[in-house]
Amino acid sequence: MTNPTPDSVEPTSLTRHPITVLLVDDQAIIGEAVRRMLAGEDDIFLHYCQDPTEAIRKAAEIFPTVILLDLVMPEIDGLTLLRFFRANANTRLIPIVVLSTKEEPKTKAEAFALGANDYLVKLPDKIELIARIRHHSSGYINLLQRNEAYRALQESMEQLRIEQEKSERLLLNILPKAIADRLKQGQSTIADSYPEVTILFADLVGFTKLSSQVLPAQLVGILNEIFSTFDRLVEKHGLEKIKTIGDSYMVGAGFPVPRPDHAEAIAEMALDILEEIPRFHKVNDNPLSMRIGINTGPVVAGVIGTKKFIYDLWGDTVNTASRMESSGVASCIQVTESTYQKLKDKYVLIKRGTIEVKGKGEMTTYLLAGRKSQP
Image (cartoon, rainbow, N blue to C red; front, side):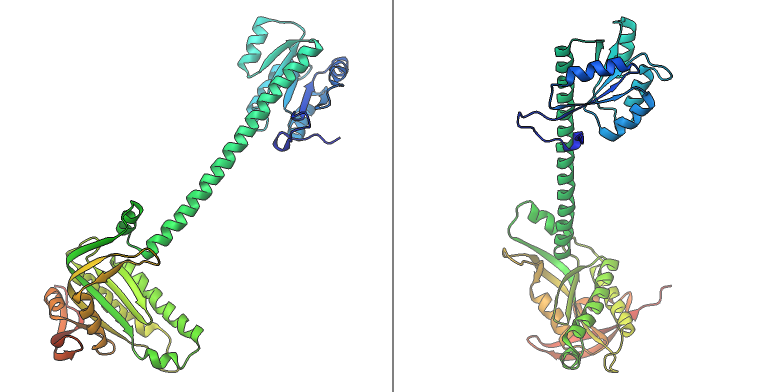
């Protein structure tokens, strides 16, 4: 008959768990006597070992719920074996009932000091022996069940932590951390005013024509490759990506955490974009190019709505930055007067002159050409 292990015990029809007993005693007569005592107990399964070395192997094999251990044995005495069982990870929690021919206080104290759970003078009374076996086995099985429940709880908590981290990463891919934290605190509508930020729009030149020349999957692949590069530049310069609309990429600086160098940070991003674009493969022998527009001014930034919300910007500053892109020149960075004033000391800017800007009328704009040589 196969003996169940403590990790797989199931309640019997009498709501009792199977009990596996390992008896270690060099005297065969003791083994036979204990076997007869337990013969009528259907839920108790006895394994008997005369040799201590064999007992070590047997314990690892059957995972007993209680060990009956003789103290006086040749070669390896019971106290040494007790010490081994308590030092071994697989047996250190198993209840051990010491059997001895004499009830010697000193020996009993030593056995308890080494980790024995009980001490019986052999041969004990049958009723008492069965009662103690059941008592210690029940405590051990309950301990295993609590440990299993604790492990299950720990695993659930770990899984919850992993899922929370996934959700956190996903949320931070959508919202700035400062905004995400406020939403988690219960704020339903967020709208903050910033007196001065800088906004950049970048647009792929000839996108409509390009979309008619390549397969949709290829087109998406091109945009993904380009915008993923832009995302890395956003991380490099500590900016806030706002969104992509078709082939347009929008990014800003100076919010939600204000920074005095917002215009310079956006300028560096723009110059890096123009350096990166030529590295992409040509499509149908046509090189890719970008138009970039930048503007500086006040905005309102925040989150509105309850579904599919994003962190967005509102105000004339945003509209003007978009116009700087749409009225710009391929492979050039067009900036407004307000941005020019922020950059003129550190960057080379060429006055484009007065141009007609849709919805804005005539505006004086500049082209950002590069960085001024450092002394």
